[in-house]
Structure formats: C-alpha cells, structure tokens
Image (cartoon, one colour):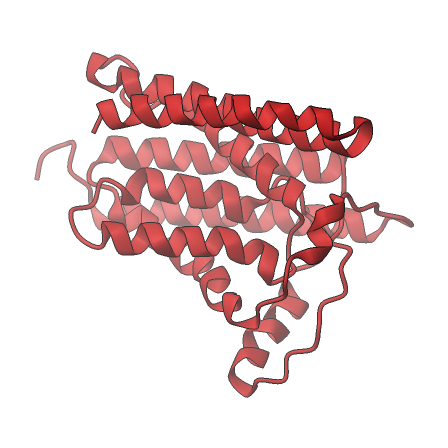
Length: 257
C-alpha cells in the first residue's frame, strides 16, 4: 500500500472528527436558539404552496447514511483530506450563522398517521429542532457528498438521483424554507472555492472556474427572489442572468469530465 492510498483507520478518524464537530456545533446552536425569547422566520410568499410529502422523509433521513458513506468512498488520502476540511469549514461557518442570524421553521407540520413513516418523523421531532435553519447543512453536505460520489464508477447515477431527492425533501418534509436551501448551496460552493481540489493541477482549472459560475448563479437566484419580495417582480429578471451563469458553469464542468 502506497502513501497515497487510504487505510481504514484514516477514514474512521476523519468521520469521527467531522461527526464530533457537527454534533457539538449543531447542539450548541440549538441550545442557544431555544434560549431566545423570539426567533424569527423568513419565507417567500409562494412557499405556502409547497406540499407536505410524508414519503420524502426517506431520502431526507438518508443524509445521515451518506454522511458516513462518503468518507469510505474517497479514493485516496488527498481526497479524504479535502472532504474533511470542506465539511469542517461548512459546519463551522453554518454554526456562526445559526448564532448570528437564528431562524426557525414556521409552517405547521401535518400529523403523519402511516405506521412506518411515523417513526422517522417522531425521531425528527425529538432530535432535529426547528432551529439551525439557514444555511441548510443538509443541502451543503449534499453538494460535498456529490463531489466525492461523482468520481465513483458504480452507483454514480443512483446516488445523484438520491441526492437530488434529498435536496427536494428538505422542503417537502417541512424541515427547511427556500432561503435555507439557497444559502446552503452558496456555502457549499464557497467551500469548493476556498478549499479547491488539486489546486496546482491545470487539468482541474475548468472545474474550479465552474464553481465560480455556480456560486454566482446561486447568489443571483437568491438576489432575484429577495428583490421580488421587497421591490416587485422586476427583480426576477436576475433569474435569466442566473440561468445563463449556471449554464456557463455546467459548460466548464463538462469540459473537465
């Protein structure tokens, strides 16, 4: 086994460090938010039309499984190191926002009567608080998971679909509002830029450029919705610019595949 190859204890160690960091920061932020007299919420008007879909609890709960899987899907020590630093970065920055700008989920969650689905929803009610909303760590982590899963030769398409369903489920299980998802996406791509993969290798230049376009696209989408909320529909013109930016990001990313 070469120096660049992974050993199981290295993967377990990285998983343990990230788990401890996540649990410590998440619970500390929950304690802080729950101690406040009033924690606001932020929603866009059209979010009230988002349906509650009990079955979406299945991909939502898969986030915990993916959190464990991703460390054992890394192909070498360098990829494991980058993943670990990105997860720690995202967790710490999200924690800062949870404390500086605490938000809570504001929609009433319907009762789930299905015998099997009732169990995971009961788990959420007990262990997943309505605080620590924005940025959504479920979304930020999903992007980080994909940065590793996309390199796999098997199950790549299946994992991509499941991660997309996971992202949608943050809304349809009534766990997050849309602004949480957008901020989680921004945070994930910020981590890709600040902690780049193969920084000094020119063959990854297109991928790094793509991340700048994707980050700009998410910021433009958020800006368009905020302008629409506060100044009127003219702000939605930014969605066209966001679409063009995302297309450019996809173009550069495909050139790197």
